[in-house]
Image 1 (cartoon, helix red, strand yellow):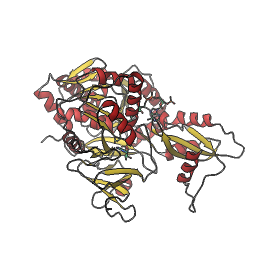
Image 2 (cartoon, helix red, strand yellow):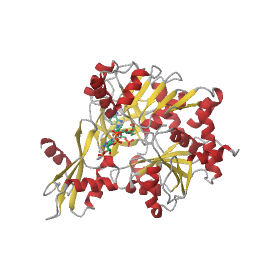
Image 3 (spheres, rainbow, N blue to C red):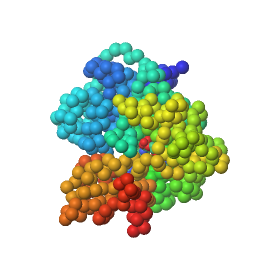
Image 4 (tube, protein in one colour):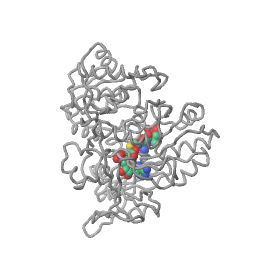
Length: 511
Ligand code: MLC
Ligand code: AMP
């Protein structure tokens, strides 16, 4: 039995090395060609002194270099740390220091963002750059690491099932974001369950436009491709017109995965141009709620019912609508094979009957091991029987399909990216004009939800909304900045002093 997805991929490469695997911006890789580069990159890391278990960050856009780095880091026995390319200094400084990242693989804009952080990141020794980068930190070119590794014959022991593969950073309701520790066995178990449930085979070809630095693109899209021996047309980013053209022109494509925003934009583009995609074997949506209306509109126009599934960084994929049975809009189906899910009362933590709303808990071989160096947070997240508290609210419908009804935690999901209000509130309250800030999510037709900030200014301070947006933009990823800023005299609070965001939401929705 293979112990890791890496091992499965290397086996495929050995058995049929010439079979096409990856296309990216006109470059084609067969399995064998990719495996050769992965091995060279791993040996290059070793030759430059990286030891098993050390952390290597990927602060990279989608590219062939991303795929090589991802697998090469694992082949070297190191631990990958995934970083959203939109992150700026506040997020970067925290993640790279918390994970004690030794090497960061990045592009030129990533390097520019990192150079000023040099003093805050004593563990960061050097960068591997995929493009020419500004000086300020020791750096080596990606191609030079490959070349160095190609000249080496160092042995590369395969990872064991229990070895740590990745730290996926995710924020909680309190404090800074935490690294979810995922072992090779968890990645392998989940990709096996996903590919079985969706009948994914080596005959499939995926159009992959989602970012690889998050679970959806990487651990579903890329991993499913590698596990089954299928192939992938990887794009640097999602552009609706380009995706629609590919879906119309390329008869070899069989799969497309998206967050709801991607489906909304594809539909709009199709209506605007009159172009419709060819039939695919499977369209999948996840990472945020897919509105039943969008699901039905897509079906009417593209002739296929999207399959919706539910997952998260800590657990990978949890539940899925059936491949063969009814894909009921507004539901996320049932647990993947070999995994469990339940809905519990938020106070008693007892399982609830169908039709009653509570917190969703999951258990199984796909669930992460815990938060990196955060035993307190890990303990809070699991109960004594190993059930993980997702923080999502849901209920079983009368036919046993899971319906997600809300969130127990204060999370905003905008276009499939997570935003924790507290993080934005902390940045806003550092502004000299701001006495208090409350950040919340309101409906948005494109992104699903949008960030709205309600501000109590200091007496006499200027009320300049744009200045506050710019303030956030300079410090945090741009997608976290408020889209709307509302000034008020006081925030509604309950008897304990907690801001009553539901009241603010009602007021704002009405205004
Ligand atoms: C970009 N912008 C966003 C945004 N994405 N604003 C709010 N929410 C978002 N998601 C802003 C930028 O800050 C910028 O603002 C402007 O939009 C243009 O930036 P862009 O990069 O050109 O945007 P675009 O390419 O249009 O990106 C939109 C998108 C992207 C939908 C393609 O957000 C995306 O790829 N989302 C997918 C996220 C994903 O993969 N999630 C999976 C997480 S895993 P300005 O004002 O500065 O110009 C997970 C588990 C699971 O959740 O179950 O899968
Ligand atoms: P992340 O922390 O980025 O992995 O985001 C995980 C969160 O995305 C989950 O906890 C859910 O709140 C949300 N999510 C994922 N898939 C779905 C879905 N199909 N419907 C609704 N919410 C979803």
